[in-house]
Length: 147
Image: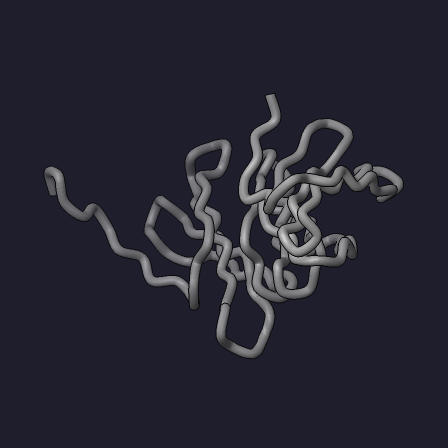
């Protein structure tokens, strides 16, 4: 309708982020399940028929995600980890332990960047060998953009 709701699609508990796929055919939703026992998930919704195609389990209380076309990088606030999800295979392919309370996340060609609000730091993780560099911040890193 003009100026109103186009479609309401019900997802799980406490969605924290939604992104369109690079081809525009899907919406990817980060569902934290905060307040419930259990892990969160990345839900893939088809825009062709507004249906849920897959729910991919990730870590505890996922808060943010960044998708680059093939992979989604998910910050799991509740267990201090990063989940790497292969969107084409509909599965978590790797989990990287960070510690702290990770929230904001983004990537470039070589690194994953994640904000740790518990330790007031930015962590740069090498995508190949998973080595980490901790960059202290003066406050909680709540969001980030790579320029």
